[in-house]
Length: 189
Figure 1: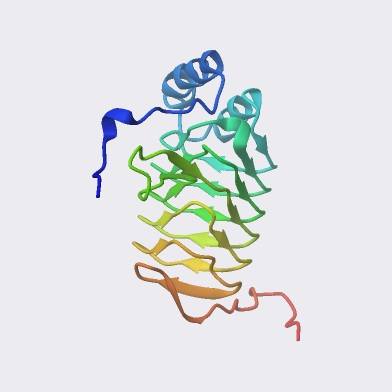
Figure 2: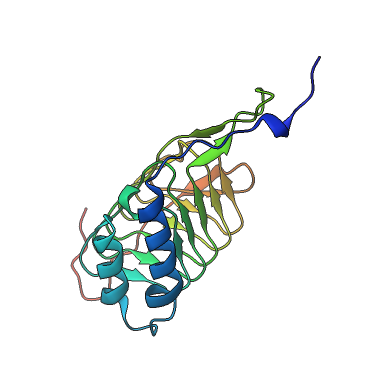
């Protein structure tokens, strides 16, 4: 049996290098150094580099996006401090989704069975009204269902069902998520 030989690893280029370098510069300066209330400015910068960003999106200046062309954020999403969106493949986020501080969404990994350790990748999809809580990990190929919650410090390696609260590593559903009727609104059955 042969062992892992990382000297044989060859990184495949998934992006045009000049565009990537330009984005890295803009992200480290105009994006990262912008004052907190300039949500629209950061959305503009991401759009300029190919991201599809909905209305009312709030992106913290410390979040990072690997390749904006592979990012879609729906309306009224929150992307908190130090969130990492590693978009080797696409990340698609629906409307009214919260990505809390230090959440890691990684669309790439490595084939651990291959001695050359090649990069693998698969998209991440997060449906409307989901919440990815603080210090979580979402791996390649994961879909988080509508209204689902990935609890703090949990890791999602498989799909999470809609309207469930999922915790642990690996994340498992522990209960249903229900929403209370907002004050002043009539109850809907």
